Length: 195
Image (cartoon, rainbow, N blue to C red; front, side, top):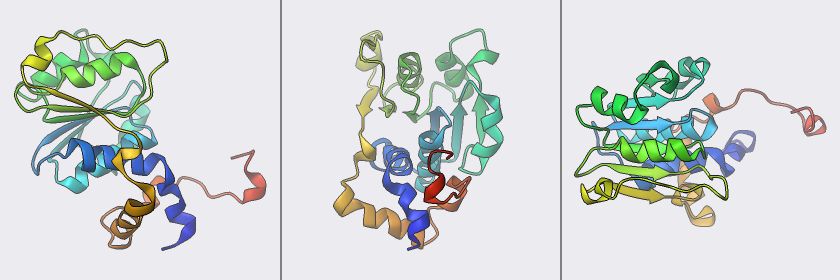
């Protein structure tokens, strides 16, 4: 494996990829919402694509990220600023009751609540990846749990680095995981501060 490429598996890619594949575990043909389309969110979309999700809805306040996100499997996009109603209601309407899985990659507490409240009653699973502000509080109505939604959290995508990263590298070597599309620039070590 080329070390100048697989080095980027050390944090963001593995975190988002594992959040989808290892924690959300979207069934083939399912619908996944990804909140936040930065590097971790794009990796979560890539994980949903690899798992076989048929609809991957990218949610971000920055529409300039949407076109790039298509390369990672996103099929549709929602900008919460384009809607009067809460984004969880928009997603529920788009998906006939809610998405099967959601992965939150922003660290914003409101996005975390929206990611949980947009999953379908009965089987929906929301995965929190972003790290919130230390004083943030997660508030939702208890019925969201009683209606059989599941809320999970993850750190580093539930990968154990020493034993699991070789499998992620293997995904890349088999061309199932496309690492190159995550690389925007290559700079020499001497220019690390500029980078």
